[in-house]
Image (cartoon, rainbow over all chains, first blue to last red; front, side, top):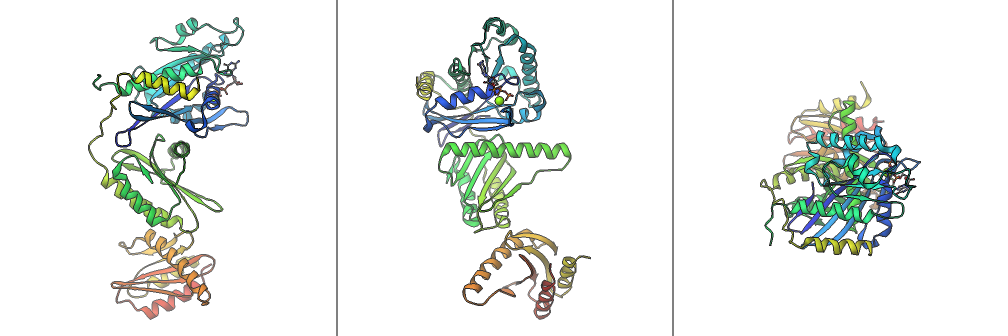
Length: 200
Length: 154
Length: 115
Ligand SMILES: Nc1nc2c(ncn2[C@@H]2O[C@H](COP(=O)(O)OP(=O)(O)OP(=O)(O)O)[C@@H](O)[C@H]2O)c(=O)[nH]1
Ligand SMILES: [Mg+2]
């Protein structure tokens, strides 16, 4: 649940990067961290195992700037993708304003993507959230790998993106698509916040 | 001291004066900062809040799983500074307090006045709900794009 | 029965004593307590602990050495405290008509044996 404060004119939104193990969630945050000016970001915290698998979460606070007169802050989280960390995944998902589903475009990870998406829906449901009501975008990562190993954006959309929400091909390692994804989810989350307010 | 909502100020100020705490952070259970004292950067506060909320969430879950009962608080005794982390119910939902204190006070004093602050917060919380949607300007997407461009330097 | 329980028993048996606690002064926490219902043990431990530490510092800087006994007299009763070994302090909350002499004696005696 985003925290909107009218007195301080501040908006804080929580965005969670979800997806199967090793799909590149942490890499997304690392890229963002590396590209954002220091005065706009806080410390990035990674609670990881010794082999760099996310254990609890990664966290990166960003200051977006002023939007419609509100100081807007984003909190980016990643969940641990490995299936046996579901309890911690649920905790991180609590109160999310938006989800970026980072899929692994490699054909051999097809089932892992499906399983993780199903798991996202189950976990949201157990928290009383209908995935159809929540801002979600897809990112199909690792598009830099040889074409015979990866599925195209269309193929990934067909497999995962039934509601035709925005989706972005990406190479998070080198940054392609990372910015577009963050921009996409930011727009959905802020639009959702604005719903119900008179326009013009 | 900085608080998002004015009714939090009095209870928090009393707590700070009585407990002699060095740092204090109040947050929602999903890690959103509500008020803070003693941090120098707002972004570091957010990191502390995310970690604090994570610890509380996982400790509560562990307590539930093992049948250890309700989570009342955690105290970490450091060499030079100690810290108290405790969750409590408010009319605005479940909140968490994170307090860092030194040898000039004690965990007993901090806990005593923390509990007192919780009572005062519960009494002071306005019952009516705050408006839930900000008035975003029609052209907010332009501003969003500009902000993101500035953020990424492109 | 433990030494601590014995200490609390002896002190609370004195007429007019409304409660006794063993506290860890530096932490301001209750180690053991035997209290009447209306005495808030947590608050007494926190505040008495802080008081004992401050007064110990005062006593030291005035060249009095370690404090052996503290008596705080209010309109409606007193708080008595006797530091024992380590960081432990035996504290009694007494009403206005308590036998203060006896309470003091028992407190000092029992505090001396607190491990
Ligand atoms: N080729 C390629 N490799 C990538 C890309 N994104 C991430 N990787 C690599 O994939 C591996 C896993 O990336 P992480 O970001 O740690 O994956 P994760 O989703 O956080 O994994 P968990 O924490 O286990 O859930 C790392 O070795 C990354 O360098 C990409 O776009 N292309
Ligand atoms: Mg990770």
